[in-house]
Image 1 (tube, rainbow, N blue to C red):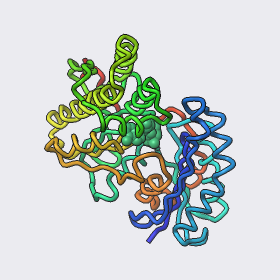
Image 2: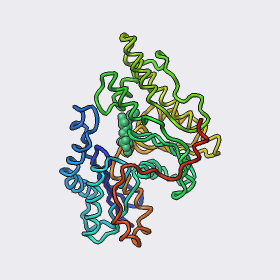
Image 3: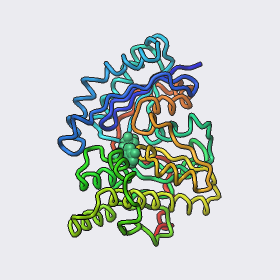
Length: 337
Ligand code: KG4
Ligand code: ZN
């Protein structure tokens, strides 16, 4: 039974997890939310420095939580991209050094594949399935035919869904990150009270767009300052969820794939969970603790690749951090409107 330690420092959370045979033994996350909150968003250079100062301690916390020592590990994994390059470099370099120093195999991991691994692991789902990743940096729909046969059907043409939550939360005077705060406010609102345009309503493809929706909210709030913030939050949340599920359902019809895996930070959203559960598709979501960025999901993704990684160490230890790194192959864009 292999025990793998995974590290994620792709953005503003320092995450270290330990997994064994698909079971999460530890999941330690040190969030930088407070550090970046006063700027209203992540400051990349600050994020790198903070990862550097806390990572060693978070590794110690994860091992203590798992009641293991470094000598119990069979492999080390770290996110190589996509993400903030300086932030990625901290975790990637640490992971390589730890693996090299202990004579363990090192596995570089794609951040989005790690999100997918978090969503499927507990549910025991295997390909083929549709996968919707909705996070602060990405909104992408994949047809996952096999772990090495991933087809990107569509993606956001502008803001990611989580980014839209964050920006609209800011317009509503809520703190950063805005997703959870906006969702909490939305619970007290009427989701039909404020008419908002449904993004990409007439497209035939599988792309998303959220910046127009954010602008529509900004204009509405400016013109009608007396609108109830709860109603705006609920109407916005409903519109985002309908846009996400609309595209996913159309893809399910076209591909015949009836299983939908939802991953990324926005997968923590209750309304999205309810809409997916009611869609008639077989759905899998990550457990709440594994929805937003963490190291356990990196270790979960790495487990599957550990055996193959052992034979490729010279190559894998030379892998660099990459800020922009697509997952899988893109479907013909001409399918989009
Ligand atoms: O996956 P993640 O932790 O980081 C990225 O890789 O981007 O996702 C963070 C995003 C943020 O935009 C946050 O506002 C959003 O996920 N988020 C939510 C909720 N919880 C987190 N959005 C809507 N509802 C939530 N409950
Ligand atoms: Zn993420």
